[in-house]
Image 1 (cartoon, rainbow, N blue to C red):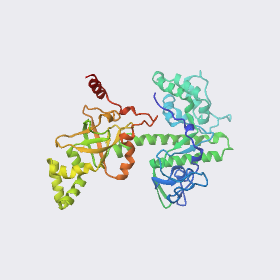
Image 2: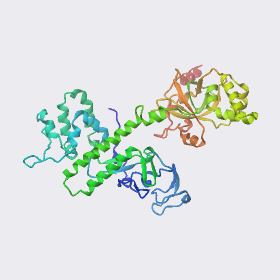
Image 3: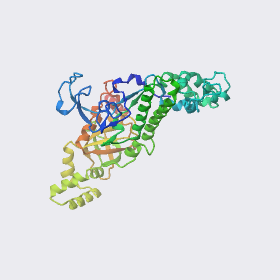
Image 4: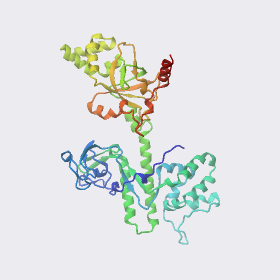
Length: 457
């Protein structure tokens, strides 16, 4: 199984631990809650002026050296990867990623890690780890009500026992081997809280409206604080709360997965499964050699639709006519090629050099699936419905010229043009991994063959 496991200890920052289960007190976000500005940044701003430690902030302090961390107050954009942490100290939980794998081999896992204090007639607590050679029909009675702590201490023994006595052992072998290979990563005592950009909240007075996942985080903080405050008690009194925390961790994990997959997920429902303004689709073909790597030429009809409002406004100003008349001219020009409109309006628009579009090949699963290109050409043949692009961006788009139909979105706002600027192919020629030339922009086989044939000729 090709799954990259991240060790939370490699990224953990003890200065970004969320300790307060109350996100708001007296109409203000708490400093150590799940909406802490010090940890996650501001909900209201995309751009902040701050020193490294966050004590000195505000655009009026730009350039000032902070008295606490001795760093300069600079302008910075709040990143999506700004995260906080839950620190469970000496208490360990099953990593939610591994939970489902373990449950395949140990179907009774919830009954095992859940703990309720039960006393038998002799005054002894019920629940112990069975010997490896003990009869399988006794497994439930011996493991039920074991609790997370004992389950962790005897995990390998329990896992092996359940695997060997499972009727589906052969089908479960890959899962069993995967768990053994990652035995050191299965139990965690730290857990990340991802940035507020992805779990927004609205504060109206003392009323807080937020995404449900924030409630899961708050419950975990509340319960772990309760356990730590009663640390003097015997561990068995904390085991029920440990189970509650485990369930909350699982809910966070499943909530994220459910929100990004399926028709009801955030990406599918709000981005992929909705209408997008100023967009079109067309089959791609190779552009001529005069075009740069970041240039694109699109169909005449497509341009007329994408830039309808700019064209109508230009007609109104240029011909001193009303908008209804201009709209009729635009409509006629969509039905049949209008050379005068092309020469007097479309060509000047192209010559500004400021028309930019996003080219996307779905599924959008890799870096390079979306590129920011300059719109520098519109086809004069009204029956040509293809887009012409450089051969050198074909590989990074994972496309070819056998009928691939790509998506195109016109970027109208200057602010968004600046945000998407890093997606220009010319900005991606150097690899973000090692700083060397990005081989995905190398010559394709047809180009290499053509050059070789030319040299031999």
